[in-house]
Length: 352
Image 1: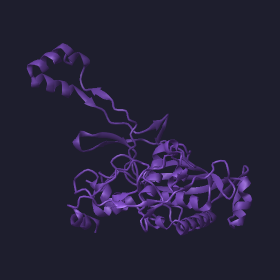
Image 2: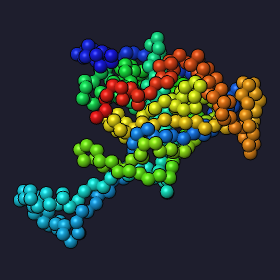
Image 3: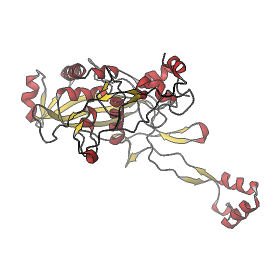
Image 4: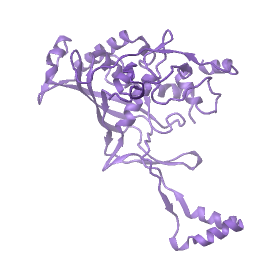
């Protein structure tokens, strides 16, 4: 459907849809009145290979150093245009497999990557009645027309639909504008001059990476499918509906502690067997000072080491309540609720 729309709309000079961003005064970070703080204990299970680059590429020598051409010989070969000698050099040196992020003995998806995933899913939530509840702070490239198949950004546009054409104006930036009225996503996840209230940890596991040889000679160390990476998402001073927003960003739906498949890491759009994962929530824990708050919502818990632990059926009840409140207060969230970009990628066949 979306691809047919693209064909019909191609040729128009500017298809950007002007959208107003709803902004309200930012939430005070040092007040928990009517709000809660705690930790979402969870893990990620990869559904395909996932690679989050460490940014380190190594050159490996494929023959004895003594056999390598001398620098003077290389310079001479370049001056003479001696292709044979130059080709010999390229056969002697190769780029090693690009590493995934590793901390000590643990393979990790960094907390910053997790936060970027959650935020981007919310920012890509389509507007309703020409109003969005988020600016585009994650530097998602603005488009004035859907790109043709095969051109830069066409996979992203095919998966996310017309949201890529929305023009939401300037991003929230209180540090330069001194305007502390911000969109809801910036209020939760932070903006220049405003600290975020959601802080994912690294998600890590003691596992063996696998080598992947991709097209065009690219080589990666990747996290294999069905790998579990343990982590948590701390939050502070969130209202109940804001907690629901965070859960929706994780792909959670009502009556489940398991999220839909989301996309993460390098090549998440371009390769069929890369970038798909899902969140599993094992429990939510709050400090003991929120005992009365939970009881007011009729959410039962167990107490362990002066912490209130919500798990099992009661965890599902809490998920249901917070998500329902979020959907009721922010109707735009219905566009992202239960949306699996990984499934759309698979159904539309956008990856090679």
